[in-house]
Image (cartoon, rainbow, N blue to C red; front, side, top):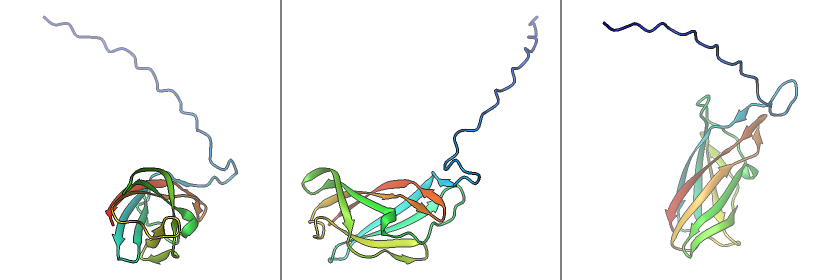
Length: 142
């Protein structure tokens, strides 16, 4: 005959203490820590165009109205090999249409050389009182 185990008393979970609050003020800023970026690269002959759709994963809302300082683009791989810390510059203004931000990128004042590129596109800074944090990789053969 099998014996039945007597249930042991469960320990109560420890109380979580709140972590540090960004900003430290009475009304903390909300951080878009889970910013999803969808990036499409296209080469139209005059240079590489970057199209970025930024979405706050917490709310599912599109983050609109970003400008050039909110974007950082770096080459991870160029036609000549790995390109560590090769920042690219935005060669045009940022055009916005239905939440999609589009701009062209260049390196050293010239359009990107022919060949395979892998770019790291990041969104940074603040927008409407929220801290923007997000990055993704995108590849193109120019």
